[in-house]
Image (cartoon, rainbow over all chains, first blue to last red; front, side, top):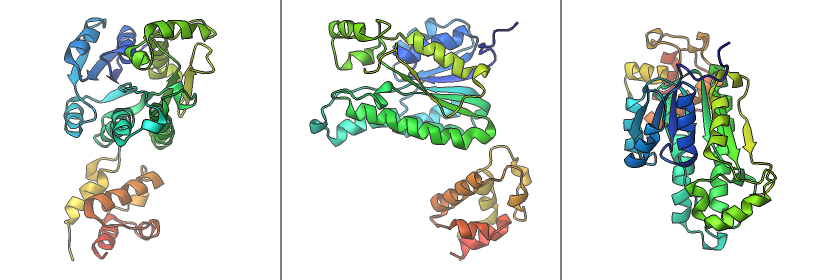
Length: 246
Length: 78
């Protein structure tokens, strides 16, 4: 029997693939047989992701997705896609009292504007195939408050609400749209607001006694990219190590 | 006042569809008969007219048209 989770013959775009969860997803999708197109801003780190991917049918495309022209250039080069994983994003910790317009832009541009506009442009340029699967890497932060995380949490809440509407609009073409909401995962982004020592201490409060790894999130993404999740759309799936707070 | 060509309008209209081939569309096409026509595509058409021609049409106005030519005339007379 063929592996039902196989991504063989699927072409999948992964944004934010130069580090953290995005890198883990690119590597896992390659492992499951997909032809993966990875994109990010940093060539060196994107190349490092590439060297860790099995198979030779992968492509890397440099792009800053906040930039309208770079998005257009990326879309021009893309083939028809069976999957898109919107993983590019940034974190920032600013107390509410200190939030300025630039703090909001710094987070909302990459975390909300860019994926929403990229998705719109992918659809209008007809790059999304029928029965494709689209995943947004959101965050449990959308619902779990933590100090200094207001703008980041709002950006993830915004993308989750957006994705549910997108799911509805794309359902007639059997295109599925889902969100993944991880609690804390060991990436550079986790270190934005705390030291490694503080995090090692804090992860002991998680029922499973650890934070997530990029692989933990990547395997859930594989499920959502594969045909086994054909009946799942408009969902937002938590993956938290049992944590009820961040 | 003619603000656009019907040919261009037909292409812009057709671009709102994902599966129906461009060749299917001409001024006399009754778009309501197309299998892919839906309220979502109607919304996309209204949005396209607002953005490309800077003209707002209401859902009721859209509903009063059946062919691309009729919609074109409506937009042109606004």
